[in-house]
Length: 399
Image (cartoon, rainbow, N blue to C red; front, side):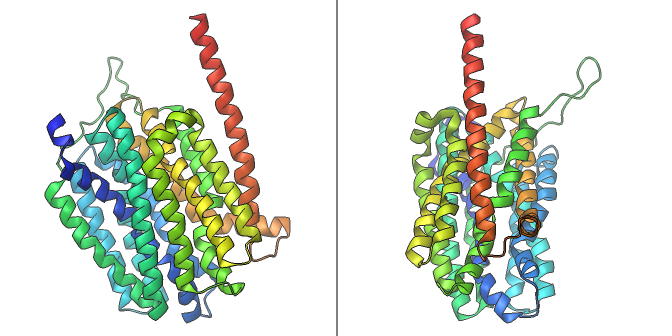
């Protein structure tokens, strides 16, 4: 891709617009409490399927997405994904059947899974160096802003009728038009070749899988913030769907600000960016556990947003760099996204098992587990990073 094209403002806008589609799923999250009220006979875990099914589908379709880059361009994959997101979102506004909504979430999840790795891959494909790092931070910021808008819109619509929250998927249309008309088509990535010994060229490293597993474990616990917030607020009499959307929007606003500043923050935190991000998320759950007012929930959401805004771009950049060659960054990112999806889908079930094992019955038991796990995990990761840096410096000195 020529430098002139990558410096084109509309190309950068189109590349960042792909990230907007990742947060379309957040439009229905504030409505979970109202949907649960509309279907009182449904188990909480069944209602949560509306949030977790896209994560399950992401596991499989993210892998398919990475493989598809060898047969079609990134732009064509994004186009297919947008169509599936639209088809899987709108019909639930008109057919008020829980089983139908669950089926539609599978369709939506297929598109969500296809586009999730492409939102990062399109940046690593079109841009390099500091420009890529800056745009990766902007991607998180743009996505956070979209999440804020989509969550507020979903909450406002759900306050009138939970069905209306699905009409928010009409926003896919203008996003699709920007991408179709301004995003360059960089063609198909060539399939891997056999080397002299007849072995396929290696695309990924051990670190790719280590990072994917780490993200799966982190998402198993942190995802309960999104899935449990509306229900906790309703159970404890703190707020309704609109106020739940407000808290979620403030979380994404904090992530937006950190995303804009990520390039400068990463220069200071360096290899510890992801670990410190996870620590902030853990600390946010401590605040959320003791929050007895909307104000305290908002403070917890801000801390969560700061942590998320640090962790997300840091881990994506690390995953992209873990590929053996830049052209395999999309494949590496698809593995990471699959790990993220596994963690999010298993989150309610793993936390339910841990609640039973630990005999925790409070409405915020999931948040208690998340706080301890994330703070401990971030401390361990920081120690490992420090040891890795020390070993690297010693090897450099010896050399």
